[in-house]
Length: 345
Ligand code: FES
Ligand SMILES: [Fe+2]
Image (cartoon, rainbow, N blue to C red; front, top):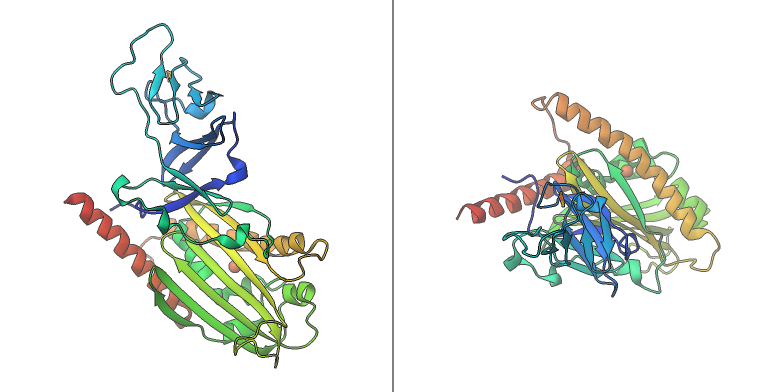
């Protein structure tokens, strides 16, 4: 069975990373992918392996709409077809590299590496906060050397906040308040309300909260790659749990997780906010706080990965806080099994 769900859209890059005239190489689902833009601005994704002698095409040159391999000069068009061979007129049969469909949406470049007949751009998860005038964020990227499922576990179980992120996001109320878990049409949602507790350091600093707050954490996992956190807080007694967030601060922590290999991933993320849009430095400040926390996560995730590899059969126990990510893992197992069964038919 494949380590990845293949019939899905994954983020290959932020839009601004894919430029005309420049080859970007990125491994996705264990496959080397070359990304560039044609002269008319269309993004292109090809397998980054020349069909002649396997040199990464990204080591060559982008010539207008074509990529020229850096080794013997074969040229390929945006569909991956070889269109020129130096010193000969005939193009050898089968001279092509796989091309992958791309869709640009919400500042992301989404790639489809699954079965062509299963592809539907309507399935791309909604990340409109990245490209909406009422929201502001800074596009960010982290590379993590762990299996992608460990990061999904991490984001679906925020009970780790007071232990891992005491200087930014943590406050003991998070771990002491159980979260409710439910299945959604394409994933798992976990909801936690921490009522009448002190704000964590980041909300105290950037939200300007003096007294206790009601804090919400609603985490949506949309299989297999999106984790969207609706997080924020409002002064206790102003009605946030009943639906009035107008006195509070509401953020979206947006994550598109793309497996690089079985043991590494790309995390395309942003912290989007809708309040205080004109406050100087707020977008940067929020980004920096969350990045500090994410770097703390990376140290834990990479350490976990090492231990998992060193002791794959070691005993594990589960606790109540694992409910959401255990459901997410079951869902992912089912999706991968379905793909394996369909492929065998
Ligand atoms: S390896 Fe690409 S042209 Fe020879
Ligand atoms: Fe974390």
